[in-house]
Amino acid sequence: MAAAGIAVSLGLSALPLTTISYYASVVETIKGKPVTDQDIQGWADEAERGYDVEQLRKRGRKPVGDGPAQVVPVRIDATLLAALTERAERDHVSRSEAIRAAIRSYVA
Image (tube, rainbow, N blue to C red; front, side, top):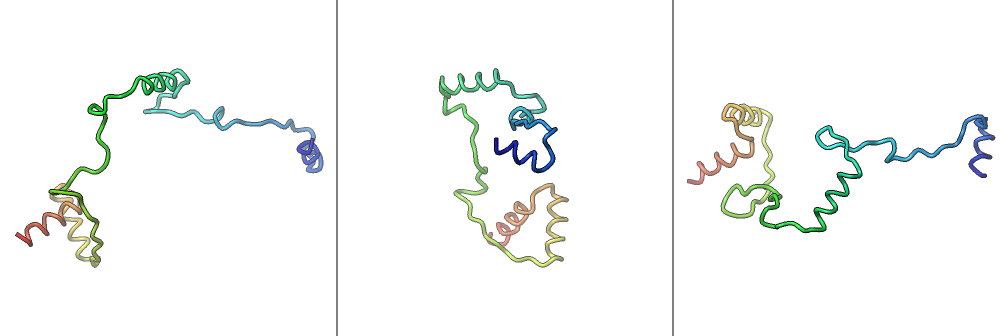
């Protein structure tokens, strides 16, 4: 009743009050295909049967050395950063990989 009173006070009495469900207005997709209730039930059934842990996809970043990596923040001026970016693009590697290669060469 309060909502109807607000609608009337706003001059909206001719407009019907409806509730729009988020789930009715948004269709989730995977690779462009709408996800159906049947898809969700199939995934739930699969999960209830259990998974072979050895066949699950590995998560996380790939190791880049002989152990867990640490982030080391480094300040680089614009000229050096541009040179680094150019070299990394030329070598088809990330800037991080180019930096690691330079450090390995330096400490060798």
